[in-house]
Image 1: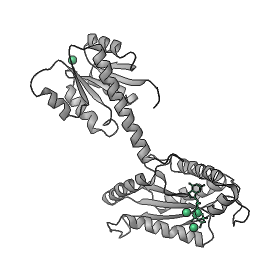
Image 2 (image 1 turned 135 degrees about the vertical axis):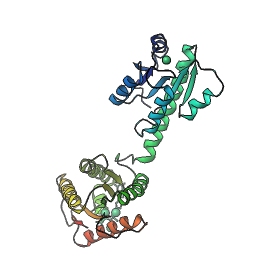
Image 3 (image 1 turned 90 degrees about the vertical axis):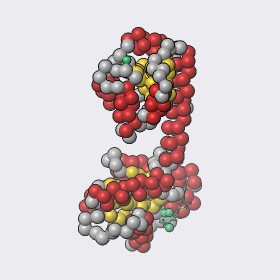
Length: 303
Ligand code: GH3
Ligand code: MG
Ligand code: MG
Ligand code: MG
Ligand code: MG
């Protein structure tokens, strides 16, 4: 885990509280503060904090509502929120947890207790984030892994059908890669896979595009809102950029540079009757197209 200082946002209209928290947390993180909800949301948008300390009574919006809004936004839902309050009435603590807060710190503030609790939540949040990252990425290439691709395929094909938008699924496989490994060795083989992965990252640039390592030397792309014309353009560019890597192939191969074969399938809910709920059909079709590319001589794209 890195030692980078955490970014902590204090939202409280009482400057005495801000001063006290600032002092208590000076060794725990970098502190920003806001004295009302409007200012707080601006700051959160500027950059997402690692943790928020939130006053229950703010001049504009109630703290509980601020918490609810942050928890309902996918971009901020995972930020731990700790309430600061002198409310002691029955049931209030429950309300705080009901709106998704991570913890509740009562007044009067005890500096060392505040620091310890904040540190615990920061550590916990960091560990969860790391686990999530590990669960979703391929460590060798930094691409998404197959688990993520499979999860997103279900989500995106549902969305495509619901919103009547095209979705393209692409499968790529490195050509004659056994020979590459046999000739240059496995370590060099790994390097080659990493370079091709970088080309994929470069090409799947839109925030909604997803590039994954599907298996050993196989990759997959999930391209929401991409029709046949868009897919062809993007994949032609990808094929060219992989050739332009200019990676020398083993001597006894068809192409003297490392190439890939590509198969893709467009799910077009407007023109097609692909109403099947079998989301894997689109992958099977892309895979069939890939093998057609292999049969036709490799280093090509087949729809
Ligand atoms: P084709 O053109 O038909 O795809 O021929 P190919 O030799 O590439 O055949 P295939 O795709 O079946 O072979 C995959 C090879 O990729 C076999 C395996 O040794 C190698 N490979 C798979 N994963 C890795 C990896 O992580 N690192 C390395 N270095 N090689 C891998
Ligand atoms: Mg207040
Ligand atoms: Mg393969
Ligand atoms: Mg191969
Ligand atoms: Mg093969």
